Image 1 (cartoon, rainbow over the protein chains, first blue to last red):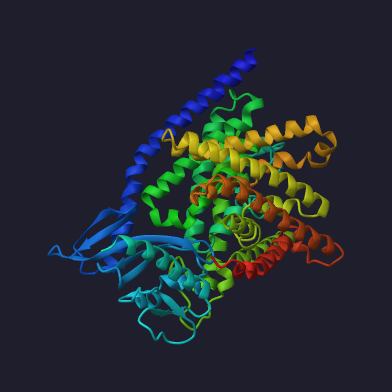
Image 2: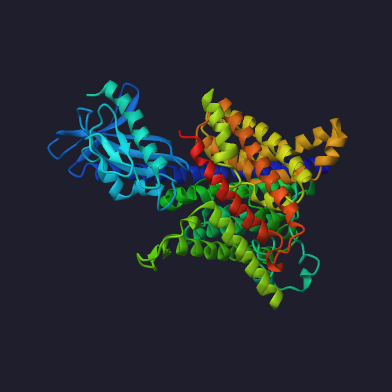
Length: 183
Length: 211
Length: 193
């Protein structure tokens, strides 16, 4: 009986102390983590909209997006997050779209684990700048091994078609939802 | 619950002072090369040297703290529930490490991803508690923990360094090889991790057999 | 429905849990010497993985989230897994002694298989619903078993070959694993989602 009591009391004590320690760490770390995530979004938004002064979250039709304004308070466009599956894992990106929901302002890749040197180049400037001013109607398409000819076309990265295609379909899926609630 | 660990030193540990307890983890009983434990994080996060370093430090932190608590409590933990107790203690410290990383080193935390919580099942930690900390004094356990942790980190940094050098041409984000170098993309992929570690173990065994 | 099939295929082949995510490497190196061992370990692990996926999913959604305790995730998951292995072991020992004798030694080893904890963590990270989690558990188990069996097959063949002494054991196994990983990468184009 004594042994069982000892077992139970040690386990309970350990359990309670761990629980308390964890709760404490959580309270300390949580605000910092939230801040980090906010900073990440802020950086992405300002990278996409260089002339922006401020942005704020807007909830429309079930979608969480950000309206981005310039120093005079004029609406520059909307920033939105989207994610989907890439070649190696999930791709999470932020994109900016003009108020008319027809033209993209740019994209930023937030998270991706694509093949370094190939698929990972979606986070590189050469790929990203193709999306600046890209037409999103009827939808974004891609071509391989030649220069894009239409205003809604981009060129996929050589040797990384799947990653490039993933970015395009992630964007298309989200934009289609946004077109229903914007402008 | 077994970890297949090598209990070589326990029987004769009376003749070892703290120094030896520490240094055995660096070479003679190196957790990766000799005990072949803790493979998962070793292969997963060593795409770059800095990630190897961070993972190594996080693991050493958990190992150190767990050994501290467990060796202090070794007389009162009943043997029947020891594994359960060890596991809860280890998991608690891992959660702490994870949250601290997320709060203060956000980019590194994102790169290490789910492999930080996986430190919980890193055989090295449970192995050391079972084989050593639960049977030895606090000071010796701390020395053992530090030695193992640093030995582990060393291998991680080495592997990370090699893969980063050949796969990206950089070491610790410093560009070493110029643009002329055609990156060995395979080094950044799982295949490269397995193969490089395989050869490193081979090299280690070769050096050991020559001594 | 298609989604579930895709998750299964991804977990078992295109994003094989051992060869792509490095989970389960310790037993992978340790238990892959003979094909029968590999099959036994693989099946036992698959079973534990699937049940673990179910139980941890329930705990996560109905206890941790509901009561706002996400920080207890790692502690609770590992306790669940350890207990599960214990229960499975007792159960098999009582109801099927021959099966227990065949699998016996592998069961305790499963707890420290990072693949199990790993898959429960991924399941939470990827926000799978209940059925997706079950399929993910099954698929991961299948992938693990597949990798183990292939590796065991190769190693059995290698027994009659001359391997340089320093590379014997862990060294050559890892190199083979690397080549296997390369081959499995070829499957990535299978699923174009």
